[in-house]
Amino acid sequence: MSDNVAMAQLKQPGRLEIPISRSENPYQVLAAQQTGLLLFRTLTKPYEGLQLIQVDTALQQRWGGIIPLDPKLTLARQQSTTEKAFLLFHKFDFSEINFTLYEINLQNSNYSKYVIRNYIPFYPTNMQITSRGVLIGGYYAGRIPVILFYDLITQRSKVLPGLFNEAGELIQIRNNADNSFTIIINARNYNKQRTLWIKNYTTEGDLISSSILEPTENNSLLFGRIINEFSDRQLIAGVYGARNSDYSKGIFLARLDEESGQEIRYFPFADLENFFKFMRASRENRIKQRIERKKIHGKKIRFQYRFLVHEFVNYNDEYILLGEAFYPKYKTIEQNLVYGLAPGRALIFDGYQYTHAVVLGFDKDGNLLWDNSFEINDVRTYNLQQFVKMSVQDDKIALLYLFDDQVRSKIIQDNRVLEGKNYRPLYMKPGYIDSFSTDNLNVSNLEYWYEGNFLAYGTQILSEGRGFGNRNRQLFFINKIRYD
Image (cartoon, rainbow, N blue to C red; front, side):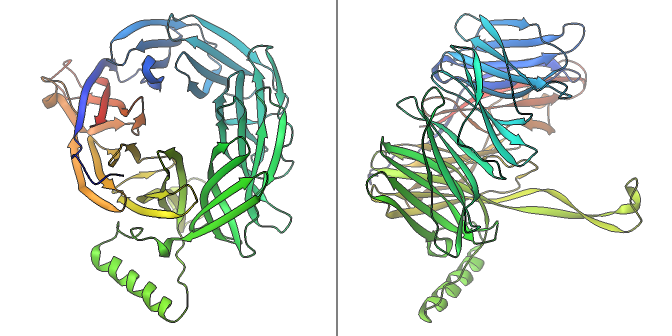
């Protein structure tokens, strides 16, 4: 990145507001790049069905309508392309294992309904649209990965060959530039180490190749994301840990090559320059002093974190990785307050607490060029998801996440901090600001949209006597956000 840096500015060029009652379901939002957004929700009596609203990039409505929907169906997954949206449903009581798919044309509101024949009962946790069909991934018996491929041309489905009959974790389904696709699964190898299996398929769902990463003896590979450099070479970045641990010790970078085989490089957290920047300065200094003392005596200090890699992208002459660290929280409850339990105390799960995001840059040869971090305050969730997003520009990277009604951001250039953490409120239209109750803001995570634009959406409760006149009203909103 260049040294000529222009300071980034947060802009909010648009906002959409739709009043709804608190008894109604809020809208969900599906981004479709430059085509705009699809808003959708299920309606209850007396107007049962699936309501759709399509808006352009200026947040102006283009069309809307209602699709009849079996009330026994529940939404499982959703995905979009620039031209179409796909909504996947299943029976909420699992009385039937087939899936129902709606394919919606975003230009003219036409839609098609498909009943996808299923052969193995499983709960869908992943969906990906390919050039030819739909991939639906999940787990049989809650632990065995299974992927169903539905061909939209032939309208036939099949279970992908080459998967497992044993427990594993479905890590990623990725489309490739040549219309093939790649699947990554985490499972144990013959030496009982957890590692990653990379399986490549044709556009019709036929298995092309299967590879397994081979970690060093005392390590396991826990999680990863893939980039296809060329047709015969793939790059995988992720986290590794001790042989029988779920905690990560550092980042790994692996290269798979049909001619030269595979190479795996390891980068311990202790070797990263800015990994501990989320801590208070005094604590960070103590940890770095411990690391140096160990190095002087020829020893290594190992740090273990819960860590997920969310993004691994090719940008200009670098590969950029983004991940987040977190830890599970627990709380003590009095069991005599819980039905059916004997008196006493019990420890129960109380969500995942996020600590910080980490960004790393690698060169084309796999050498670590720089690392940086972004502290995450207050965020706790019961479902692991990506909070921090990045806007990668020629001379800087903007890191941002949403909490309450504020966009929290940090601007970096490689391992430098150009602008420290900033807090900027979401834009609200004049006349409603005093009507909002900030204690009742329900905002989704920040989502990618198109060409450096992001969107934030949620509901805002209106205070009594303002806005729509009573506390039973709320406002669904979408904010368009970008850094320039």
